[in-house]
Amino acid sequence: MNQIAIIYPIPMDSVECWGTFRPFVERFCYTWRKHPPLEDCEVIAVCCNGMTTAGDEIHDLFWGIPRTFMRYDGRGADIGAHQYAAKELAGNPFMVCLTSRCYFHRLGWLKPLADARMRYGPHLFGCSASRQGGNLHLCTRGYCMDAEDFQSYPDTILSRAMGAELECSQNNLLRWFENQGKRGYVVHWDTVQWQEPGYFTVPNRFRNGDQSAMLIWDKHTDQYRNATPDQKAELEIAVSP
Image 1 (spheres, rainbow, N blue to C red):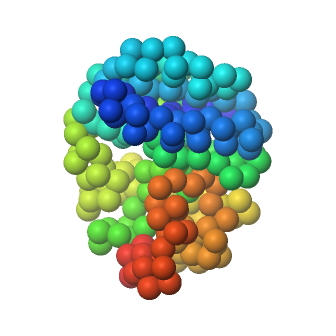
Image 2: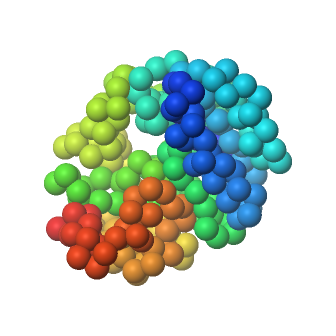
């Protein structure tokens, strides 16, 4: 099994930006310690556009967590930071790419992803799928691949808009993997699905029930959890029309 690198981007463009995202970084670190991954791994904390903005504070937040800090001076937001890390990391780690608002709700959240990589090989893995926007895609919140695969992706992500296109455009990352003869797997606690309709049949998946089948939660799971019944119905339809 490849080494496992958890790629966690931290927006630090300004004091105001850091003030907005600091609570989410705190939550990430708190829930990591409360719900350990149960797999050997290292967090690559990618400080985006200003590692010194928060001084030593950012280092203190990660106490007890195996981590390496990396600076990314680019405008590609989360996915740009993931791609940058893929090119900078030594070897060919299995990358678990998170957003700044990702967090954990159950012990051993990393193990199903590591087991899926061991069983199926170097494919694209994710925690949820969606058709929002019209194109089937794996959501880029807890998506995983070998670093070599991201290194071979032909375009450099230079903006947030390019990252959004990589996630859910007609020529998205799932489609790119399929064009390379590989698959996209959605991994839940007790099952792995690699195509429709399986992506959208697991109970308590993304925007379904209490979403407890998901390995990792983020702002989109929170949005659904906090929505009214009518809003939930709209969000469910958006995922799988």
